[in-house]
Image (cartoon, rainbow, N blue to C red; front, side, top):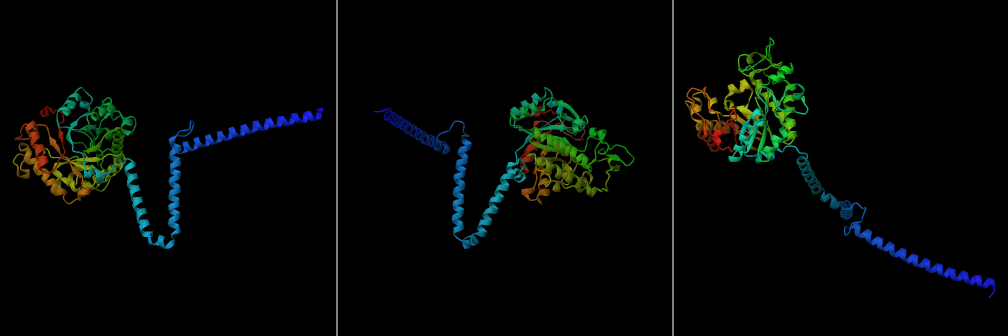
Length: 449
């Protein structure tokens, strides 16, 4: 074999070896590709999770893609049935779409955190509450309140947020009250106080005294209520009022309520949501043409606006009213609280049916303070009659204030202890109502122990 033949034979052997190597590599690569493909398929359909993948998100996307394909196929099949079928089913399809749209709108309304008044009115919380001032809530005496809650049927607290003197009872991190120095801070840690109550499943109502506010009157001349000759309109205690017709005043009161909703209060209760009375008040300059019959329109306007804004925060709005405005047009004209119309503005009405607040002979009772059951029952029976004209689905619930104090200034008064409190509660229930709140300005509720 010459050199050329030997070289040719060597090239042939090398080529054969290379071909074998290439074949082996090709087979290995093919197997690798097949195995990888199997793993990818298993990962897509959720059987295994591929490291570095999006996991559940990819799995959901794959399922969604399958569902979309199915829907498109079904839509295609419907289209193939022809225009006659679509025309025949057109109204039904539109109806179904409308129902779906309505359902989506309802879901959106529930999801946006706003207050569902109709649902709340159909099943309101049963409140058995106590009034608590800021100084008591911020002191060791608060333990007494908690002890009463732990040992009785009390399940709610009406906590002063802005009291009769215009002071906000805790520090606000921002807002107009903080800017004008209204935040006194009796309650050092409002979050902790709310948490203590929530831990006991207590329903917490924030009380805001409205138009009786010497702090705002001093800080903002535009809000202050004055006579035509510039004198401040004050009450019998010398406390100044602000103008119920002024929308700047409204915004101040609504802003405090919105803040309370944000930090966890369950409900806002507006007190002193009325016009002032007395000789000086009769000379007040409201900046608008105003007769007694017009006053209620401003009170209703404020509460409607407040309710709209606070409902957007997800909680209800209630209003304290004089018990004497029930069926009494004279009192309605003086203070601007129209009981029937207010029932459509707020979610709960809290009439102050304290027996001591009724004059002798009212409801045919010689001394109402001396007959707590009869007085409260008569007032709430009258309440039912007054509100019967309002559709129940749009009618505020009634949650009366009851007397937990002795009215020593009333001629013929009696002492109020456990028996007199229970008499009033029994009257509430007999009149067809469930909820009530006890008022004692000094927060002395030892009669309940």
